[in-house]
Length: 436
Image 1 (spheres, rainbow, N blue to C red):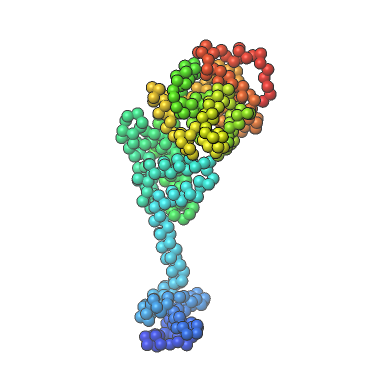
Image 2: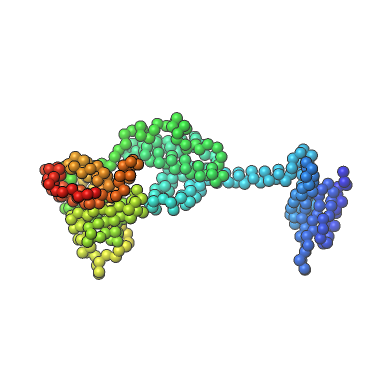
C-alpha cells in the first residue's frame, strides 16, 4: 500500500498552486484555481476503485476539516471499501434517511393546514374550508396537533374518535363516535384523506390507520347504526299558516328573512347571503349563484307575490337611490348579513325551540307530497336537491322553472290560508298544465 501521511499541516496551509496533492491511501488535497487577488479554495477528495470502477468522493473543505480529520474520514471510507460498501452510496442513503426522518417528524397540525391550503381552491366555497378547519381544530388538534404524522397509528385515531364530549342533550362524558356520530364520521374521513396526502408527500409510510373499510369498521359500529339520526325539527304543514301569522307579528329583519326563507323553501345560508344583484323584481326571480349552492349549481328561485312584498318593503327603507347591487338583502349593518344565529334566536323568542329553520324545507316537501299532485321532481328541484340517480338526472337537464313557479305560488297561498287548504288537484284541476 502507498505510504500514508505524505502531507504536513504546514504544507496544507501554505500551498497555493492549483492541483491535487496526495496524502496517501486515496486522500488528496484539491487546490482550485484562485481568482486574481484571492486565496485559492482548498478541499479534500478521496479517490478509490470499487468493483472495477474509479470513483471520487468529496470529504469537505479545508476550512471545515483539518488534515487530521480529513485522514479520519478517508480511513472510514477505506474501511467501507474493504467491506465491499461504496462510501458514496452509503452517504447518499444516510442523507436520504435523515431527510425522511425529518419529513416524518412534521406534526399533524401542519399537515392538516397544508392539506386545506392545497385543496380549498377546488372546494365549493369558503364555508366548506371553514367547516374543515373547525372540525379539525375542535376534535383532532387537541390530541393530534403536535404528534408527528408518521407516529399516528390506530390507537391514536381511536383516541380521537372516542374522546369524551357532550351529546347536545344534557349528557356529558359520552364518546364522540356515539354522542355525535355524523360529526365523528366526517372527522374520520378528514383524518383519512389528510394521512393519505401525507403519505403521498413522503411524510409517512405504512397503512392508513383512519381507513374505515376493512379496518376501523372492525372496531366501531357504523355511524348510521349508532342511534337513529335526528333530523331537523319540522313543523307539520297543517300548522304552517298559524306559525306564519305569529311570525308576521314579530318585529325586526330576522323575522322578515325567516318568512322569506319559508316562502322560497331555501336554505338558511342561501337566504342570509342573498345580495340585491341576485334579485330581479321585474321578472320575479332570485338567482342564487353556483358558489353559494350546496350542489355547486346556479339555482333560480321563482318569487311569489308575498316573497316579493317582503323584498319591496326592505328596498323602500334603503336610503338614497336604493340598495347597491352588492349589498346584502338581509343586512344587520352595511356589508354584513344577519348572523347564522338570527333564526335560532328568533325561534327562541317565539317560544319555538322545538323547531329549526331548516326544518321548514321538510314542511314544504311534506305539503307538496300530501296536498298537491305536482310530480316529485318539481318539489325536489324547488328544494335544489342534487340528483343521485343518473337515469333521473338525464331527464332533468332543465330546471322545470315554470312548473316551479306554480308550486311556489300555491305554497305561498297555502302559507297564508286557513288550515282547511284543499288539495291542489281539486282546487286547480281546471288550470292548464304548462310544459316543463
